[in-house]
Image (tube, rainbow, N blue to C red; front, side, top):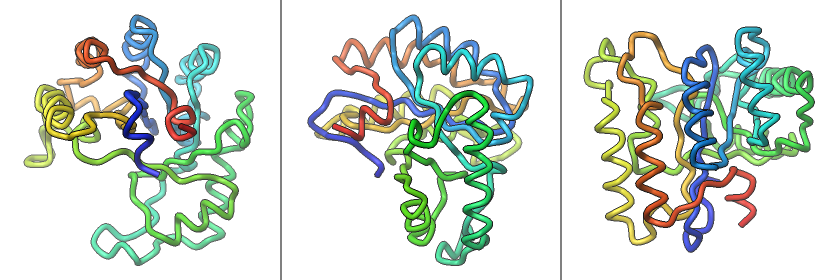
Length: 227
């Protein structure tokens, strides 16, 4: 599932997290300012990092969706040959269960977080099937914008995408798609490499301000997909 109802003027802001959380405070402040709901898919490493404990507790306390993103941020399949698995079913299941075990320490039960966002947002049909067998629904971001590139940094060369370019790509997609950003799952990151000084989360206020003017509302993934 990569998009909700295209007749619904709603957007699901999706933040993933693994080893960094430098944007947590800024993101939370902006979401609160705009009374925007959002979803956070975090790895087991993130949930078990004591430096992030307070942020996770605040996210839960304020009612944001908290989900799984694998325990150790595994790469499930080859980048160039997608049907080639790099993990066994047992490795997949054990890693995923460990992610939920760490979530349980924050009072998040599996039934509270039925949507699963794969690490690297990279998977194949087998991973989708295994996810279903675990009683979960695999989700991914809606393609078409450069939002997922907010983790890149200049040393990546041509892969690097600046924050203003990312922002404009979202507005451009909204303008050209007949359905705008209706039903979108817009993926961003709660933290990025320190080598990226141009942090996109500082653009989040501008993004939400302009989208609210256009009549969009911001919902959780569970609300978006249930529609």
